[in-house]
Length: 163
Picture (spheres, rainbow, N blue to C red):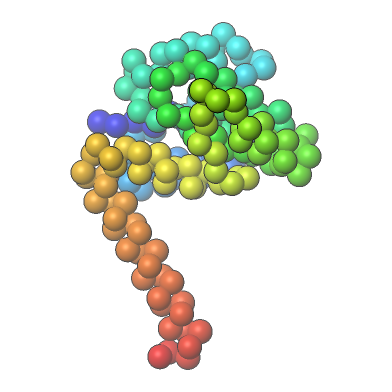
């Protein structure tokens, strides 16, 4: 069974990263959640990045605020796709420091990057990656997208006065 690793630099990021956990559980994808600080637990970061694939992880979502080195360092160590979630934290410069730290990776070390606090989209992207090889997950994504379309159509109908 496919599994997504969701890591973050501290517990203060959990309120954002929970959206990724929730969306993935909605797609019936196993999730492993942990705190891995690039700056305070570098040995744990190294171990996680080097060995996540051996534990059955297929995609890693890494959320970080401030200097936001976690996603890039994990991507440097892991053969797995990494999705970075910039987190607007209390020590952040309106979140731009996090966005740019994750987005501006050097060639050869890609990190897919979602919007500031965009953990829900990170979860959807992880599910889509898994869906390329897992038809059950792909079918759930197709259903999810149909549900999004229906919500928009219902909203449009209300705006038009029920027509």
